[in-house]
Length: 338
Image 1 (spheres, rainbow, N blue to C red):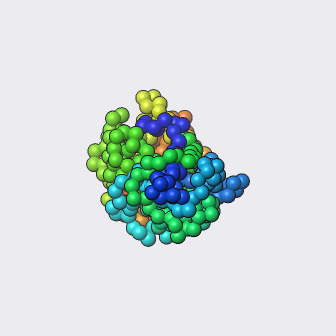
Image 2 (cartoon, rainbow, N blue to C red):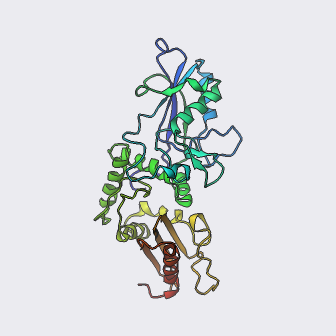
Image 3 (cartoon, one colour):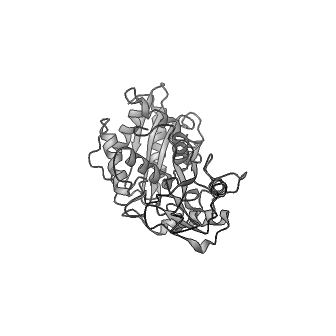
C-alpha cells in the first residue's frame, strides 16, 4: 500500500522466439502473477478476476504462429525459489510452493479448496497448461535459456492490487504474500528475490517511522524459522493504518478478517456471553506456526475507543491461540482505552 498503485496489475505474456532459428517456439513469460488460472472459459477460478491461460492461447492462435514447442521464462525472479528456513514438507501440506515468476492458481492441486496441496513445479505446470490449450505436446515444454526478446503475441493481467491484497489477507495466502513482496521489491529498486523483498519491506516501513528494530525478514509470508519481528513492530503497522498520518495504509483495516465473521477469524471468537463477545468488533491478522501464534489488529472497546494490539507468545503450544484470543477479546470489554 505504501509502495504500489492500488490499481496495479501483474501482466503475463507470450512472446515468439526467433522464428528463423526456432520456428514454432513460443515463450510464456512470467510477470510474477501466481493467480493465473488454467480453468476453462466460463468456469470460476479460485481467485476472482484471475487471468486465464485460455485467453493467452486464443491470442496466440490469432497471431498467425502455429506453436510446436513452449519455453517458460522465469527470469523476472532471482535467487532460490525456496526461502531459508522453509520446510519442503509444507509444499505437500499446502502452505507454500516454490516461488517462480509464473504459476497456476498459486500452485494448488487441485485449485478447489483452501487446503489443496501445492505443486513443486509451478512454472512447468503453467507451460504445460498453455501447451495443452494450444495442442502442443507437453513434452515440448522447457525452460527458456534466457530472458525472452521476441515479438509479443499475447498478454493477460491479474486483478488489481486491492483485490489481490484482500484475497491474500482473508485466506492468509502465503504464496500471494511472497509474490506481492516481490512487486514491492521491484517498485523500490530491490532485487526480485526473497532477500530483496524482505529488505524492501523493512526499508519502506522504516521510511514512515515504523520501528523495525531487531527485524529480520528472509521471506514475505513469515513462514521461515529465520524470520524475526517484535510485537511492537506489528502493532505500529496497525496503529499507522488506524491513525491520521499514513492514509495510504488505511485500506488495510478493511482487509483484516472480522472476529467470528470472515477469513481466518471466521471460526474464532464465538464467546457464548454476548456481553463479553468481541465478535464483529475485532478485526485482526492471524499468524499460526508450530509453537507460535500471533494476532495483530484493532478492536473497539465498550467506551467506543479504537484500540490496536499485537500479541505473539512464543513456545505457547496448543493453548497459545486460545490465550491470545481471550486476551484480545478482553480489550473489547475493558472500556478503559488503555
